[in-house]
Amino acid sequence: MDFFKVVTVEGARETIMNNFREYKFELEEVDILDSLGRVLGKEVYCEIDVPEFNRSTVDGYAIVASDSHGASDSIPSVLNIVGEVHMGETIEDGIISGNAIYVPTGGMVPNGADGVIMIENTEKLDEETLLLNKPISIGENIIYKGDDMKKNSLVLEMGKKISPEAMGVLGALGKRKVKVFKKPRFYIISTGDEIIDIEEKLEFGKIRDINSFALFGSISALGGEVVGKRIVKDDFNLLKTEVEKAVNISDIVLISGGSSVGTRDFTKAVIDSFEGKGVFIHGLSVKPGKPTIVGEGMGKLIFGLPGHPVSSIIIFKVLVEDFVKQKMNLKEIKPQIRATMDFNFPSSSGKLTYQMVTLRKEDGKYFATPSFGKSSMISLLKDSDGYILLEKHEEGIYKGEERTVFLL
Image (cartoon, rainbow, N blue to C red; front, top):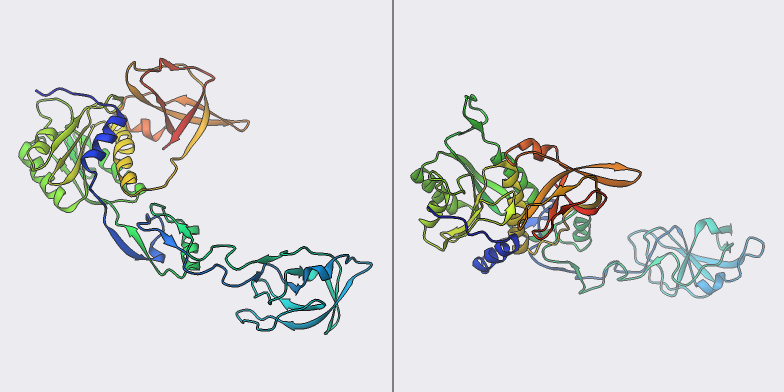
């Protein structure tokens, strides 16, 4: 019987990357309307100045700003109205001191004008005479050419998840198509003689398949897609057949359950039976999640996740998610807040601990309370808002201490 040779979470991340250093997710080109939430696979540079011309930010009159100096309600400046700019049209005529040209919001500012006075601060005596009731400064109410984005500048980095705002930027650049990473393909296998599908009748001693649905949601939230989801009995040949199918159509295989050292846990043996490096991690120095397996078979990354729901999701977040984000250079900040601990809690000596917590808000401050329960209880995830980390050298958490809570 093989026994655990546990490694730290950081050690596991480094080992995974070392074994899959050359592995890359493929790119594809998608329409901008289908790009929301996708991860950019290539830098986007600005091919034009945005805006391409000096634009007015208000409805008003383009003038030489110095013509307004000293203007007031009692002693207005007087200018000649010499024209009007229409939206979407270019204007060839420039402007000189003493003249004014009407410009709508977004309209082109004529050459020679260095300010736009809001229409509310003017008064038309007639069609050719304008009174200015307020002074303006140079550049007031103008967005200059390239102020928003300059030609040849980097505007969106590779690894950025495309947001509605980023879609707007792509639209401004005229990018109908954009290069993104293909969605990582996952294959989920739940193992165990006791596991049944949610549509089957629940008999004594049986357990409905929980993990595959929690993992499915986690994969979707990550931006991946599930290309297969199966339940397999505790049988070496059945599991090997399913894993062989999985590695042929997916990027990452997740085997939930069967990762401990029991005589009927076949995950390690199955991974080792394929061509490739086999299992290179068996056991993490972490709570929950110790019975974790990671290996390679036929060039694909295979995770043997613990069977307990909380452990399974925690390991997915800290190892699987981390691998995908690193390979995509995904620039995404994990949602977190600072909260005051509302409890004393001892840690597991020598082991990194992920402690689930619930949050409440009082007088603008967050307070965290531990969510107690076994890692086999799905309600522990349902009732928790996030988790805190207790490093292996820490003796515990003390009431009143402020900690970072990583939100689920």
